[in-house]
Length: 67
Image (cartoon, rainbow, N blue to C red; front, side, top):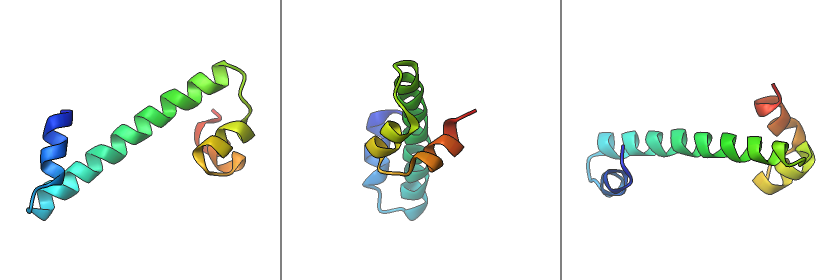
């Protein structure tokens, strides 16, 4: 879903359209987060620093991305 389509879908009065747009936003956020976490790790950030930046515990971010 393109950005313009996503914005339009979020304003839709049809709940099915709005919910699909929310799902697309969740997937996009997950992808962006994964890239940012990988970049931070490549630059030497600790799991604690990343967790702090994301507003979560270091354990939760490590469990999610510490493969």
